[in-house]
Image (cartoon, rainbow, N blue to C red; front, side, top):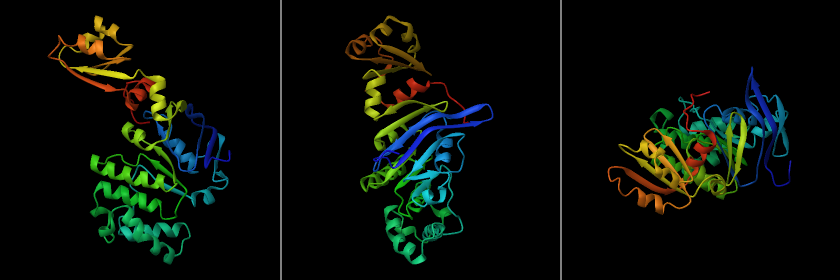
Length: 308
């Protein structure tokens, strides 16, 4: 494990029967860094998280966390981790404050120590007024913030967040992002899996792109976009748009892709293409810079995959 790494995975592999779910995966997380893991369904994201938590044993490879080895030192590692899973694991019988209290006891913390932390944790989650409310009385966004506060009860150095904003409305997602940014500013490290490309670009200092269990790209979001994509994108949709993919206009772009009823023209400069689209007033166009969603679709394809 390198001196500047808080968490390091080396040559991790996991098979279920004949299916290799994680294939020779290596990565590290530095103190104060948010590493995002993105990939389509079945890419191996959740299995990787489970191995990092000692819940699933790898077939080969090693996991070093905080100077300790997983799964040998699983309990000592988990004592310094905070975890927010995809599914709601809050206890419905306890109110918000009680959920934090009971969870802190799992770490062997004294009640007086936990009680001293509860007000700040509820304030961090914007749930001070809901201290006596049970999870069933909370909105989806409130539940996710309570789950995050609960994950912080032991003051962890590293947070493992598995799709923490799935199912939230835009306002709730933005509030969750604000809280995660605060944690990064405090020096916490985060391993984040997400399907939201705007979330990955906003929070992550570095990204890991997985497909079929393999790492297919790694780097800072803007660096990956510059490495793999043309800078300009023109989306064209409406009646007759699909025919343009095979028209002379396609020669004005470096690359053309079709998804549903939309044609995507990827180009180094959009001026000539936009002028050529002038005689097609019935079509709708969107000119924008290339983004992480374009990167994701280029590297992993546009075909929808079922959950795996």
